[in-house]
Length: 509
Ligand code: HEM
Image (tube, rainbow, N blue to C red; front, top):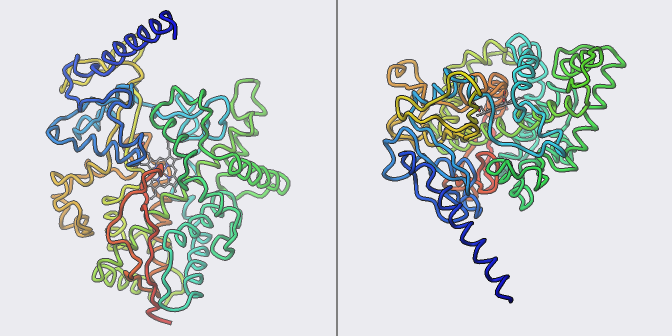
C-alpha cells in the first residue's frame, strides 16, 4: 500500500475518531447524566447485536443502575443522541401539555418506496397526521363500536367452537389461537371481509398477518433502521410490510372498495371512511391531496390490520398465561363470566363493559405486559417563538429533531409505583385501592393526543376473546409451558420468545 493511501486512511480514522468523540459527549457537555457509550454502537449494543428487542433496550436505559433517580438520561442510539424521560411530570409535559412540540414519532420508513408504511396513521407526520387522525377517529367512537359488536360476537362464538372442536385436555398453541381470533375480528369489522382464520388453517389473511411480526434477519434489519436510524431509511430501502404482504393488502382493500362502490352499501366502517376520503380527493382541485393516491388509502387499512391484530392477540395470550398460572384468579373470572351470561346465549355490549373483574384482569395484564413497550416522540423546535426547554430539570433547549423515549415497561414495573411489580395482581386496579394507584405510571396505550386510536376496540376484542374462551374451558399449565416469559429479541413489539402452550380443559357442556 502506498504512503498516500496509508496517510488517507489514517486521516479518515482520526477525523472519524474526533467526530465520534464529539458526538458521544453531546449530553456530557450539556450536563445531562449519560450511560457511557461504546464506539460506533453507542449505548445500543444489546439491541444492535440482536440480544434484546428495541423496547427492552429503552427499558434497560430507564433502569440504568445509579441513574434511578434521574428525571432524564442522555443516550446514544449508535451515533445519534436521544433522551430517555423518566420523570412522570415531564412525561406529561412532553406528551400532553407541550404536545405542539412533539407531534411526531421519530421512527421512519422509506418515504420513496414504502407508501403503505410511510403514509399510515402510525408513521405519518404532521400536519397530515392531525387531519388524518381527525378523519379516521369516527370509526372508533363507542357508537360505531357498538354497531359492530354483533359481528364481533359472531367471531367470539367461532373461537369457542374452534376450541370446542379440539379433544378435551389438548395442549394448544395459545398465541396462534388468539391471533386467528383477532385476524377474523379485524377483517370483519374494518373491511367487512371473512378471513376465516378460525375455520381454515390455511387462511391467507392469517398467513400475512403472521408474516409481519415473525422475526427474520431481513425484518430485523428493516426494523433496526426504522426504529433507530431513520436517516438511513431511504438508503436501506426499508419497508414496514414485506412485498408479499403489501400486495395482499392492496389486492384485498382494492377488492372491498370496488365492491362497496358498486353496491353502494354502507357499513360505517373503515372502508366507508376511505371511500369518503377518495371522493373528497377526486373533487378537490388540490393536486397534492394525498388521498388521490390509492396507496395512501390502503396504508390506513394496513395499519388497522397490523396494529389491531398483534396487540390484542398478545394481550389475550399473556392474560391466559397468567390465568393458567394463578388458578384462583381464573376461577374468580370464570364465575363472573358465568354470572354475566346467565341464561343468555350471548353477552351484551353493555354487560361486557361492566364486568369489573374482567377489567381488572385485562388492566393488570397490560400493566405487566404493555405490548408496544415504549413511547417515542420527536422534538420540533419552531423557527420563531418560544422554544421548548427541559425546565425545571434543565434549562437546555432540546435541539430540533431530538428523539425522546419513554419506557412503558420500565415505568409499569417500577416498584416505586407498583409494589411487587413482577406479581400478577388484578386487585391493584380494585376501586378500593384507587388512592394507591398512580395512573400517570400506567401507559399501555401511550399518552396524550397521539395515543392509541384503537384503545376501546383493543380492550373490547381482548375481553370478548377471553370471555368466549373461558366460558366453557379452563386453561392450565402443562409440561410444555414456559416457566417465565422471555421477550422475543427480534420482534418489533412485546412477545414471548417461546411459543406459549397451555392445556385446555372443558369445564361444562
Ligand atoms: C390491546 C390492544 C392495543 C394496545 C396495547 C395498543 C397500544 C398502542 C400504543 C402504545 C400506541 C402508541 C401510543 C403513543 O405513542 O402514545 C398505539 C398507537 C396506535 N394504535 Fe394501538 N394498541 C392496541 C390496539 C389497537 C387497535 C385495535 C388498533 C386499530 C384497529 C390500533 C391502532 C393504532 C394506531 C393507528 C396507532 C397510531 C395512532 C397515531 O399515531 O395517531 N391499536 N397503540
